[in-house]
Amino acid sequence: MKLVWLRNDLRLDDNPALYAACQGTAPVRAVYIATPKQWLQHDESAAKLGFRSAALTNLKSKLAEFGIDFELLQASYFSDIADLLADYCQRHTVTDLYFNREIPLHEQDRDSQVCQRLTALNINCHTSSADLLVCAPIQNLQGQPYKVFTPWYKAWLKQLNNQDNTPLTAPKAVGSALNTPNTEHVKLPNSGEFRDDLWPASEQDALQHLAQFCQRRLHRYSDTRDFPAINGTSTLSPYLASGLVSPRRCLMAIQQTAFEQGWDWRESTWLRELGWREFYRYLMISFPHISQGKPFKTTPQQWPWRENPALLSAWQTGNTGFPIIDAAMRQLVSTGWMHNRLRMLVASFLCKLMLIDWREGERFFMQQLIDGDFASNNGGWQWSASTGCDASPWFRIFNPTTQSQKFDAEGKFIRKFLPELAELDNKQIHNPSNTLRQKLGYPDPIIDYKTAREHAISALNKD
Ligand SMILES: Cc1cc2nc3c(=O)[nH]c(=O)nc-3n(C[C@H](O)[C@H](O)[C@H](O)COP(=O)(O)OP(=O)(O)OC[C@H]3O[C@@H](n4cnc5c(N)ncnc54)[C@H](O)[C@@H]3O)c2cc1C
Figure (cartoon, rainbow, N blue to C red):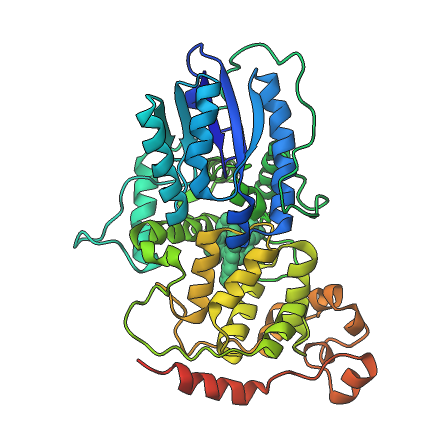
């Protein structure tokens, strides 16, 4: 018996571990392991776990068609998994375990413990890479890891250009479809509601979402991606974070679209964003301390973060009195997703104008996001707080009102998520007068932008 351990790779297509397990004639089973206590520590959101439950329910029935039985196992923490799997493998006479690697430190420790334990029982562990486009090591001329995105991106693109990026197909069936497939819904512990109208949780939906984005919006992406009222980005992040679609499949879709439309795939702005996703993973591999809640910058520095529960709560609940910030935070809480431009704005607002520790923002995001992804979230927060690698400079502090005027000029996005301001004109909506605020029951600005900015500049200027 061969066993596939599914994790953030909930797909049949381009799944190297599943593909490898299905070679040959031995029967194959698949498991997913819920670790509710660990997930609480990792701030996994109810929305993401709800999405994963639905994705696993769909995948389970597909696996059954391929002759593969699926089982949901449960342990409390990652550290309990080695014993759990050792016991499971012995009960099912498993000879080989297959899984795709995950990058953060905890996950890597968990996987080494599992491999050590199973190898001692003569069970072979086969690992593959499914989450990266480039696995080959990328180093600068001094043989060191890159710390700046642009030169890394050039080297990464060169490698992409030189290697075979063809995705694997779905594996071949290992037997006839299961006669009595277990059709029970998978329900992961701590899971909750998610917006299945926006992100139906199946691999077919993910692939269709990708195809539609490439056909209709990819060529306009660089013009539309910064405007939250426009459907200008792919909104594929929940699918990528849980692995319902692979980065290689996305790359192939870019290449095919570019070929059909007659442009060079290497110049795709969207590919550059997939590059950011991979850069943050590269950093996590190259600088493991990032996985431990530490700032990327290790030089001793007195960070100015302060505790202020009232400010933090106003930010979390969308009651700062800055319409674009509040609309963004309400988008996050009501849909589990936020537009990238707004993620940058609300993060700058929290870390710089409120001087609250970026880790509070990182944690709250993970607790809400349907696309919560440790590397991208940590990278985005450290970039915003200027503690990271190739981060925004410490003196870059977004002005929420001018950003709102620029990227939501007609206030369409604000009106959608702050209906109490819907009647305001296009000028007032970005910063309503005191009288209008009182009339509409909308809070006064919780900070004075100019003073907060000056304070932040002097607090952060410690170089
Ligand atoms: C403070 C902060 C926190 C973030 N937290 C997360 C997170 O938890 N999960 C997450 O997937 N992304 C995160 N991002 C990155 C980015 O905001 C989202 O990936 C993007 O908004 C998702 O929307 P989309 O799928 O339409 O992206 P598109 O613009 O269509 O981009 C395609 C894909 O590329 C990747 N990507 C795009 N931009 C980035 C970026 N800046 N950094 C890393 N990957 C990127 C995502 O996988 C995305 O789905 C964060 C950014 C910031 C500033």
